[in-house]
Length: 119
Image 1 (cartoon, one colour):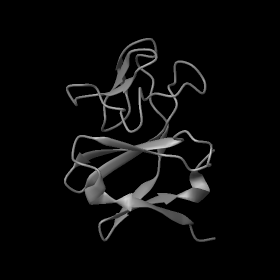
Image 2: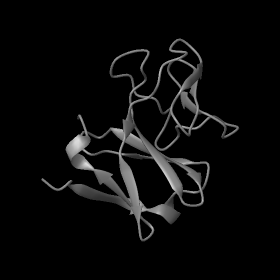
Image 3: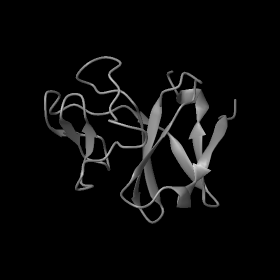
């Protein structure tokens, strides 16, 4: 069976070094977020801190990055994660990873692979 993909946004809607959340389930809260790590590179993660099951990470809409832009931050627990691979470098879940979500860039558009998304 061929993979199913969903369009999320245009790449140029997310500045380099910033993030954007997406509510895939119509629950009024973001279930995943994307971090633009370079001109033509992005990484997507489930919006859940590994420290506490189900804990959302942003302090407000689309605010997943630290104030200096160097790390993804769980604002509830203070954990810091590397944007490029989701590895926790500081905080209560140090050494753990954020759960990644497969995403692709096609002609400047971001697409999410639906068949591998857990929730």
